[in-house]
Image 1 (tube, one colour):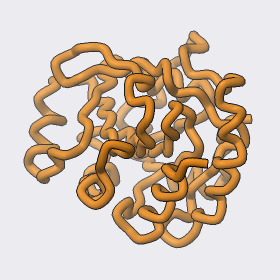
Image 2 (cartoon, one colour):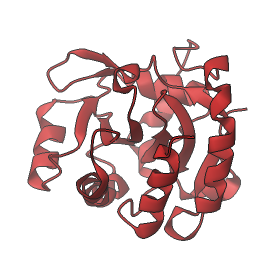
Image 3 (cartoon, helix red, strand yellow):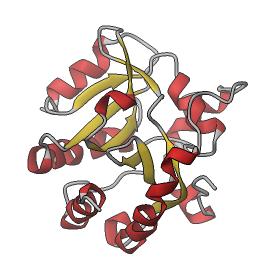
Image 4 (cartoon, helix red, strand yellow):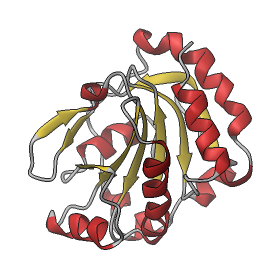
Length: 211
């Protein structure tokens, strides 16, 4: 089963997402994101992350059945297409955000700090922006706050957002996924978090650990 946010978690999701018009986004396709058999082997690892759902990460939801994100289509700032599967071999913290989302903007420095502390060949933080306006705006924001070490990717037509929404994996912004080296989403967290905290660093280490 995919992630199933509780009422408490749903209430914690940034309401600004609805105010900005995300409630008017309708999904008609199944999309590329599936809970496929190739991710079943990651189920024990996802279950093991439950112990990290404490403190600032109390809203963390390990996946009952990890979802395959490898075919998720994203864009570079200049519009080139990339698939998440291109990051195979790296554990990822994939953060969906927008410049108009106040909690997203508050959270971003913590994601930058996580990248600075833990970023290396086997781990990256991806900042997936869903602004539908001019592409310069998110780039300028990231530069202004010094978040230049993050992998800067975009979803300008909200296709990735819609795919995840159709599976009940994302309800608003910010939403962050922990994705293993095979492109399988092990856990999600709705709402902002201090991703540079000791708890978050321990979570990343557990997710990145080779079995």
